[in-house]
Image 1 (spheres, rainbow, N blue to C red):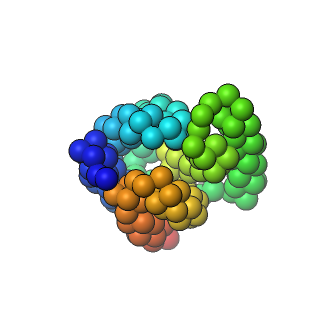
Image 2: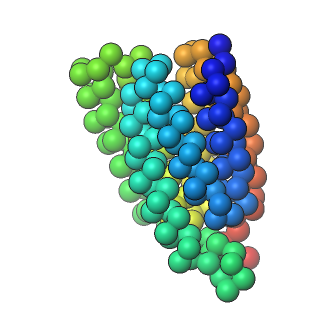
Length: 185
């Protein structure tokens, strides 16, 4: 059943992700609003790792906003930075370790609905968020992988509008990957 909270969260998130793919700085304040809405929604459905993820995204959004303000061409276009192979390996390793730590904690100390899946998606979402804030094109590839699995999880939890949003976000991530060309290409 669609709640007004979920509808508002979906609308704010869609617009924020679209603006991110377009490298528009307005994505950051709108992402803050979407995070707050989803924080409350995930609390209500006991997806605690995703709830905490929204709070951490809030911090990451402030960081990304700062980085993007400093990382622009004279024209105002946000500069895309290369992601080195070692950075990819470290990021994915940190994501895996985070998934294990969060999954262990939420499976033992909370009544989380899907502790291991929720933890894994949350951890790798943090890596993708960091890569997005650092203006790495490859962040979109990780978002695609994470969002595909999120669609299934949200269907299982009965959050159909959110599952639909994440399905659309896969398309937006493809758009972002295509549009985020490194400088000089």
